[in-house]
Amino acid sequence: MATRIARYKTLIITLVVLSSVILYIIYQLLNVPPRLTIYQPERIDKELVDSTLHYVKKYHKIAPFSLTNQNGKTITQADYEDKIYVADFFFTTCQTICPIMTEHMVQIQRELQDDPEVQLLSHSVIPEYDTPQILKEYALKKGVDDSKWNLVTGSRKAIFTLARKSYLAVKDVPGTKDDLDMVHTENFMLIDKKKQIRGYYDGTVDEDIDRLLEDIQILKAEYGPKKSFWEKLF
View (cartoon, rainbow, N blue to C red):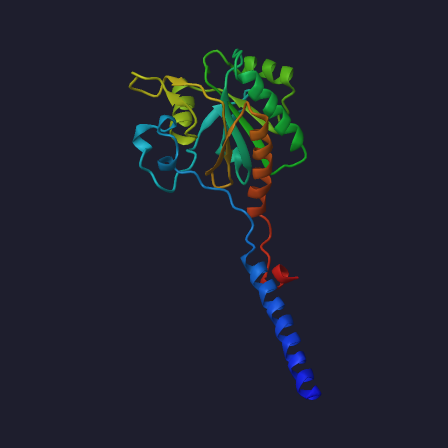
């Protein structure tokens, strides 16, 4: 009898240990890191999306652009190749939401100062006034790091088309029939290395900036080294 009890005890212990190991393996394999949404026009507030894109379900990316920054340099997508970046729309004479947005961009710049993988890009919505010289004065006043953050100007059509058809970030002015009028918003957009939109944030809200900084780290993890089966276990 004692031998039989000992035999079953050993079997029970073995089964418990084996079950624990199996559960641990399943947990490790299913413990997938969080992944940010890829935003498509169909899923975004229709007020922010040009009518030609309302039913686009996939493959949306930021279109190629050629703009001029605060140093008079031409800025294109090549300057953001293999980069994650935060984009917004502002103007230097704005006295409402823009100062708060700029302060938050400065905060992001400071938090990620030593991270070459992440850049910033601010587009002027009054490009005819915000010349490179005006943008440079503004950049110096606000403490913009030229190596990290471009303030860009260009033709009104180029800026507004990007805002409405690429970044899906601003509202059209009711009653207008082109892309040369829009309602400026507080949106910050997180753009990945494939030029896809991965997040929207209220650039005037502290909590949204904290969330943006957290999301940047989640997005960076997508580009990190992939763990093998055994690395996931151990």
